[in-house]
Length: 274
Image 1 (cartoon, rainbow, N blue to C red):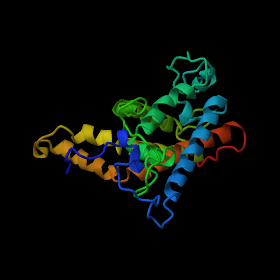
Image 2 (cartoon, one colour):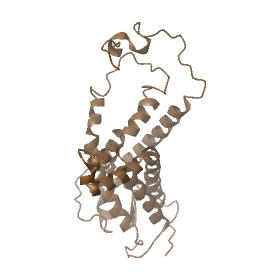
Image 3 (cartoon, rainbow, N blue to C red):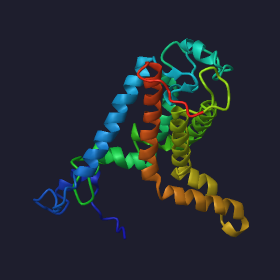
């Protein structure tokens, strides 16, 4: 229970300040506590490097009928050949740079402000804290009340944008049931890659804490809202696996982009099942 006499970390120099208990050991843990944050940092860094390379490359993002999830919907002037397919032929071509540089803002913003990803990169990159029962090295702490971390409050709005992105990727998955001549009723290995990716994207998006609050929040009596209550329970079960879905969807969207890149660059032809 708070008594009003607790030391303020902002004024006492963090956990090593004079107002805190003096403990010489940096921690009392004997396990390899540093492995999870190190692995998290390595995984996130690998995705950042890969997605940055693909975003700035502005090439090999379309192999009929597949379009990379990093580049859809394609808004750049260079997207005209893709739209001739037709993929999103009603979307205007006005962006002069790589289309990924504007499209990735929304899903990356959603992930950066995600509650799980906050924990992941706070521990992995900022060591705040690096692990349970391990002191963080920072002398001051302001939480998410100052810039830039106060921008984490935009998470709900990025959730709305992520829903729109998921709809776009769903349409791209439907379009993947075509051949290179845009005839329907065909299926290739890329179709399966896109199917797995969109299922994981939707599962991760709907497992979001904001989605759970939107579905079941601000209700005084669940008994009076049985539909929303059932939806809240379903989203809650997904939310239990939010961390797993976050990583699985991160890998799947990178794999989908890589698959399109390999086919578009001529490394191999897309195997067609029928």
